[in-house]
Amino acid sequence: MRTTVDYGTGEVRTLNNGVVMPALGFGVFQTPPEVTTRAVETALETGYRLIDTAAAYGNERQVGDAIRNSGIARDEVFIETKVWISDYGFDETLHAFDKSARKLGVDSIDLFILHQALPGEFDKTVDAYRALERLVTDGRVRAVGVSNFMPGHLTDLLERTEIVPAVNQVEVHPYFAQPALQEANAERGILTQAWSPIGGITSYRGDSERSTFTDPLILGIAEQYGKSAAQVMLRWHLQQGRSAIPKSVRAERIAENFDVFDFELTAEQLAAVDRLDTGVRGGPEPEDITLETFGLVIPEA
Ligand code: NDP
Image 1 (tube, rainbow, N blue to C red):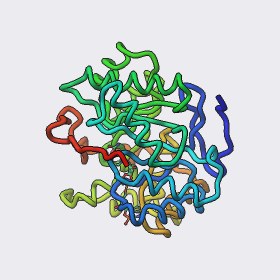
Image 2 (cartoon, rainbow, N blue to C red):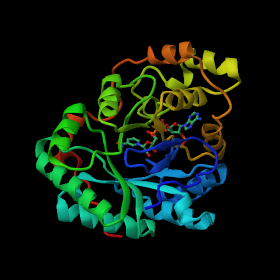
Image 3 (spheres, rainbow, N blue to C red):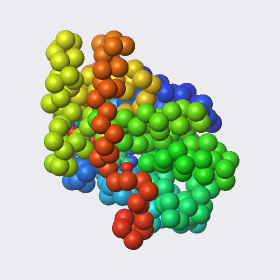
């Protein structure tokens, strides 16, 4: 299997199985299907080579269309997608791969991850992960991982499976940085990939008193470099070794979020951003995920 590829501009991360992935990617959660194709085409034109989608986002087909429309070779775009909990189980998850691959219009997926742990039905989570391992063996996916796994979930998974997840995609932004979870990932050789990396969830949920985009400390740092708050947050991720997958549907922000490779924060500035952590999660509590409350059905086509 080829482990190195030229992903153009930007940094890369080498995963624990040697596969190389762009560090900065493009997310499409809450991007409606009718605008996804254009948004992903714009991202690819801008230089992004990692696209993060999910079966649960309902836009895998449009992500695939955009990649084909771009004319960029399939192996120069790193595609990451996620299995939803309603498709957990060994056979069910193998079938979930077929559904995602069909919608994306690809034979193989670069990084295939479990979207959530199902803490109350962990056997099902393990069976789903075993299907991911089978897909690696069969050469259908290049790397496997998890999302929203807490340290206990990782311990339980690692005890019962063979392949250490390459990535744990979790909520990380200046207001909720999960340092203990990041440490737990690092100890196990798992790359932390930040979702809501610029704190989108602190503003689009509308119930937070503060937004990372208007935070005085972040804006103060941004001003020193002639950059934006989002750009400072993305530097914070990159310089601390994470992968990050900001989302936008606006061309100017898609470009802004990729224009982060020409400045560097100081150690003091990184530490100051670290201190903004409130310990308050924006997304759902991982322990509370159940099929009853989050059991969305993923269509066949
Ligand atoms: P982000 O931190 O990427 O923020 C996105 C929000 O910020 C959108 O409302 C966007 O609006 C706005 N925005 C984007 N760029 C800028 C900018 N430069 N200045 C000001 N505002 C900006 O949050 P997301 O929650 O979307 O997370 C990113 C990705 O992470 C998702 O798309 C998805 O791929 C993944 N994710 C994974 C989850 C999981 O459970 N595994 C959960 C949540 C997200 P607009 O589009 O109008 O520009």
